[in-house]
Length: 152
Image (cartoon, rainbow, N blue to C red; front, side, top):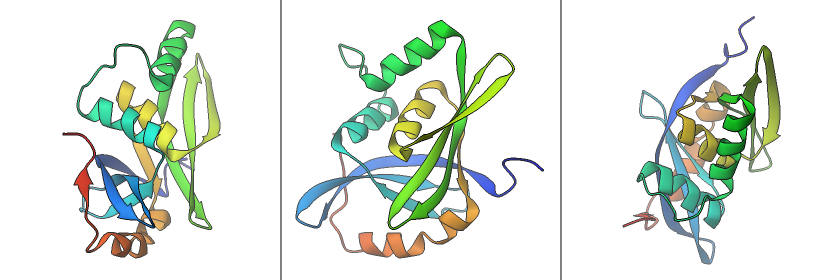
């Protein structure tokens, strides 16, 4: 059985800030080939990290995700991809897939960290189809909200 059988590749559309709850909240918006979208609420630092990669902005000093990629590279560890595979009580779960030689390892991680790392090395981001199919409820929360790009 293929480990990606229930998954499809998804891309990062962009990072936005919406007025959710009482504070501006960063959201990373994921999109599949059919245009189905999934917003995931993320932290401000992760939004900055993802936004920097999308806009090809290099900070003067390496951020945490840049550091991880540099360490992995020096140790001969390759980021193979990301699998966003579950949602429980409004929390998304993801795994970072890394390869060292013949060993493929999976690490539980926040989707935002996984996405920030995958974007830096061009690794695929995959989502379990049932998680994406349940995203219409999440998208409805964004309707009518003031969605703006986080970076100008």
